[in-house]
Image (tube, rainbow, N blue to C red; front, side, top):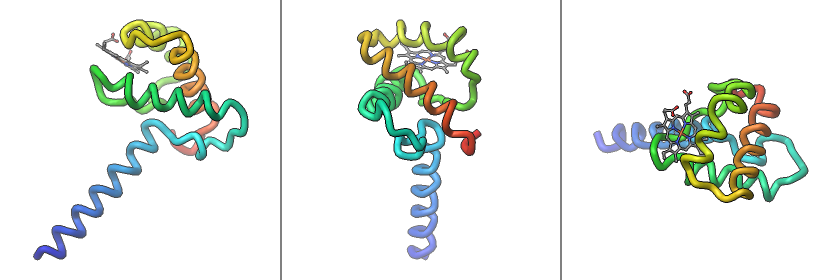
Length: 104
Ligand code: HEC
């Protein structure tokens, strides 16, 4: 019995981990070689600052246009980010949209 519970727990843990990387893909899965430090900061902001009011939103749920025109500016204001945090999270979202074609 416990064995079955353990396997279920493992399965959930696994699905949980997969979900985070789908919501906010890790930088090393994007195949990029430039601005890595900035993108890492952007992901950090995304996971830690953008989750204060709601769960992290799957980035690829919205188009670049929606992010640019309807979402980012408002959410950056709401998060009270510094200029460099704002630039980093914007760059991160852009990098994910441009490079994670397999995650849609
Ligand atoms: C102070 C609270 C707060 C913070 C911090 C915050 N959000 Fe939001 N977010 C909201 C609320 C409230 C909504 C829904 C209403 C709206 O669109 O304003 C929302 C909606 C969204 C949506 C859906 C937009 C839509 O049109 O459906 C996305 C995507 C989003 N937030 C991303 C982010 C990102 C990225 C950050 C970090 C830069 C962030 N949020 C930080 C409060 C917040």
